[in-house]
Image (tube, rainbow, N blue to C red; front, side, top):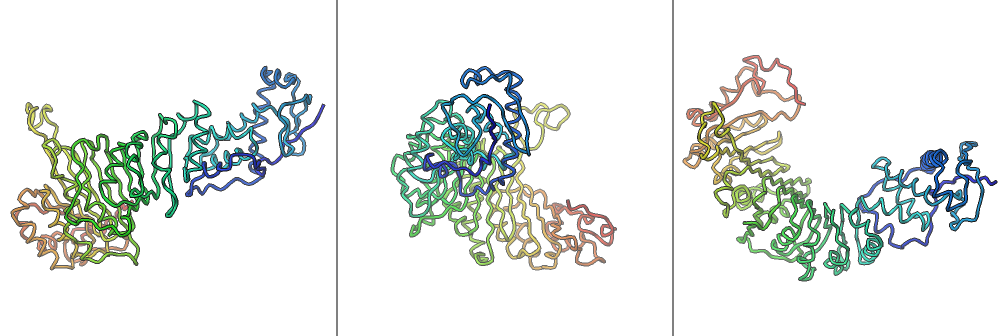
Amino acid sequence: MGIMTIAHCNQFIFHDVVADDEDLLLTEEDDATPLSTSLMHERIMDIIKNCITVISNNNHPVIGQCYGVDTGHTTLHPSNGELTLRMEEPETPWAPPYGLPRLPVEVWERVIDHLADDAPSRIRSSLIACSLVCRFWVSRSRYHLCTHDINLRSNQSLLSFEQYLKSSRELPPRIFRLIISTKPGDDQSWVSSAPIRLPKLPNLNHLVLDCIDLSLQNVHFWRNFTLFACQYLELIGVRYSRHLTLSRVVSSIQPKQLRLEDLKLVEGTILNPGQRLSSCGDKFKWLELVHAVSEDWEDATTLFQGWTMSGPALHKIQISVHWGPASAPTEGSFLKEDVWRSLAHMFQPTCRTRDADITPMSVSIQTTFFSVNLDRDLHGDIGSPGSDRAGLEDAPPIVRQVLELTCEEESSSSLIQPVIINLASCRFDAIVLKVAPKLWASSALWKTLDDELSRPRYATLACIDLIPNWTSWSMEWLDSDQCPNDVQFNALPKCASRGILRTDCEEWGCGVHGGADMNWDFS
């Protein structure tokens, strides 16, 4: 009879594993902190106790036959906080390293299986530690790691991953999220061949291209990446020389959701300022949502000034541009006519069909200055009993287009009118202005805006909603002795005379009609 004790296995590293193991399995943004030795030891001991208890109770036949162990007499003896296993010590084909107990490989694999069911924040660090213990643990650890992010950063990591996937038919279907990333100056020739070198990934759902320079890819890049068709595509830090290359990537992969983050022109590229690429027709068959993120206004405007994104299923485009003090654009750059007309083109593409005009659509841009949202929705229940349109099943649906501007407390009032003018081609039924109360002190703003909204091109405008944008608890109406309605109707007399001005003084904290004494819930 022999006595064996379990050691702290997360400290052990077996150097004969594949050299690129960590390069294959870890991502740059992975900030999971490995567990401490004591915590890893405690968790693995608990798992082994459960595993061997089950084996003892069920008289596990496979382990008994392979290792000559009478499992019916296997017992557990906790001693000084350590797991002690007493059993016969037959000759075994596998000698565990670092003084670990001579448990059958099946028991260790079951331990790894339990680690794979651990808390999401700890799974990767635990499995990666197990994959570096010894050769016999690599296969099971990698099997579970396949369901997590796979990051290919070089030709060598691609080769290692290719060989691993081809080692078993069970592995390719376990790949759900794939990251292909490079660094500036790295060799990128291997990127184009990745889809044809890897086995088919039938369940690939999410593809990330990080810091790829599209101008360096060969002519087969677009055709090869049709093999990576998936529902979610992310382009992060991608460099491009023409908008057409971006469009070809999207049309090759045909995602439902597209995320664009910090895309930049290749240095030295000069674009034709009057040229705009339009993605009309069925080029993007399944695309439903586009989310573009940038920290530079010029980079963002260069992207959507030259590319009108559209598609038969596309119904939402979100653009977020938040810059720091050092990179803030000038008012002239922010108010460029082409920038805002590009948004109007996305909302109502010039190549749109009649059906597209009655399809819900939302285009929004959030900036440090203020936010703008263009929304088209259908209203009215066609043909429903009791409705005004009952029996008019063949009549077109009621379409309502709304422009909403949200101004922060520090927003410049001079930005509001130019933006509305540049978006006026969309023919809105309603304009919603969410402004801070202090902006009502700018009488010049409201006079020019009142004159603008009275022009014939706003003939379809049915209402102007004035809503306060409460950005702090301390904000109050300008003068407690004045009703906000009176101030606003006097500021926009032409709109008020048309009966399209809508406002509620209680929402503005009216001191005349008791609104200031109300307890507002800003949650």
